[in-house]
Structures are given as C-alpha cells and as structure tokens.
Length: 194
Image 1: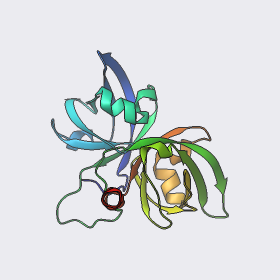
Image 2: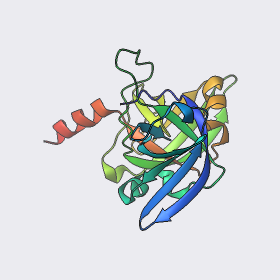
Image 3: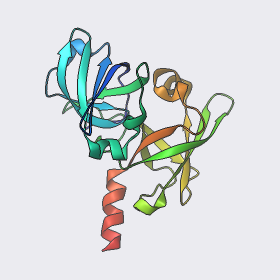
Image 4: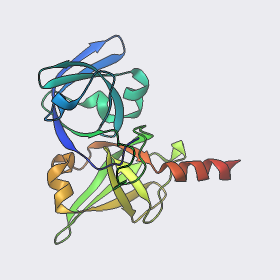
C-alpha cells in the first residue's frame, strides 16, 4: 500500500530483457535502506526488489506490468518516481494507492497558471475507468486531485514543489503516463455495473 507522495527520484542505470520480462536497475539515494523482497512503487507501479549492488537495485517487470504501464518505454538515464510502501501508523498524506496501474494516458496539454501548472490527460474509456471532479487519481505514482473531469480526459493542478520533486518537471505533451484510478471509486463503479 502506498500514499502517492513521492519519496525521491531514481535514475535508470540498466535495462535487461529476459524472455518477456524487463530487469530494471535503478540508482537511488534510498537504495541503502532497501532490502531484497521489498515493494517499491516505480512511477506508480509496485515492483519487488530482487537485487542490490552498492547504490543500485534491480526490479523485474513482467509482461502483464509492461502491457499496462509506461515501463516498457523507459530508457537508461530516465528519472523515475519512487515511493516505498507506507508504514502502518503513519499519516496518509495522499490517498490509498495500491501500486497497480490500471492503464496509461497521454498528456495532451501543459500550461503554467501563474503559480501552478495544469496538465491534461486523455485515456481510453474502453477500460471502464472514470474520474470525478475533485476525486483522486495517481499519475506516475503521484497522488493528485482531478479537475475538469470529462468522459475520456481530465486535468490536474500541480504546485511548484511537486513539479520540482517528481518527473512532472520533464513531462511533455504526448508523453505516456501510468494511471491508477481511485480504488474506492473502482469498487463503487463495479457494484453499480452489477
């Protein structure tokens, strides 16, 4: 379980394909605090640490993960949002995030709003995911509040601190991001379908 509050950025050092899996090695300032078999969210994708060498750790993304996320298109040198699993008893500063990406979306607009930034994303409605005005959504692991919710798109307003301390500082129009929709909303939507 995660909160969507990014702890730090990592840098992709090595990508190795084995059959349909990708082994991704990441340099990070939290590597010394990690252990084998620990869950860490990478751009919102929960992956297990399988190896640690000095300040670089490795995780494995399987085909299911690659099919539903933007991890299939990462490159060596890319920055990646990192968050370790939450500790029981700590504050939940973001919202409940599972680290299970539902689908991807494309950034269609990016604009400065005199102190904040507005990013707009378009996604495939065929997967039955929805956003609601002032609801929560996770984009590349970052917990955000939805504004301007539409049938197949939504926007988020982001403060400068979040821009500077996440991969949003590098996000461009047409970039693909990972989306995890609000877990409570997903359960309500599923119940309404029945």
